[in-house]
Length: 279
Image (cartoon, rainbow, N blue to C red):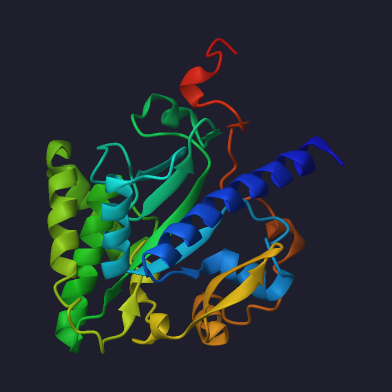
């Protein structure tokens, strides 16, 4: 087994350890979640991790997601850290991460000076209710886009008129107002969340802001095998994965079978601040 295979195996073990903690907390507190994105695809197509995958993704309805944050702040499992954009000005995600303490997963040189933890993580994405009516959907999409733009402080890479608008806004708005505007737009985008009959949307990227899922997605959950254990999943995995990937059983071209995050530094026993920074 080569060095990268050993590292990947240990990374998967650590991520599954975090997933076990999430599963335990959610199950004990009656919170709904499902494996999602590449993690759910891996469960369906490979029985576990996609062989070239390097992360774990989970989805929750917004109300359960917010409850998880409260539970964690009151009684966090020892050795695990929950992070959101509300905790750090340099946390550039609109979803939360749960990290294992005393690990490092450094994704870029720019991350060396950030305040948030830099450990190995699992991503949890919140689902919001889709606005009703064509005009309201466009307004909500703009709110989603503004939330993402001012949270991350850079263009989405979409191009076209959206990309042009992003460049203009980033140029004319002082950066000191970015986080406040992101929070405001995010709050506005969620004003339809009381309508439990509306479809679900997970606005973590511009592309995802236009992917709509059944309103009862989290009402039909079941446990499925994943990497030797079992976790909760949407019952209708085919519909979810088709919306995400189209023909999800078809393997991507070989040149695309690579890690998504390309970390520059991984450590399984020390936080980044505990490492010898001279190396």
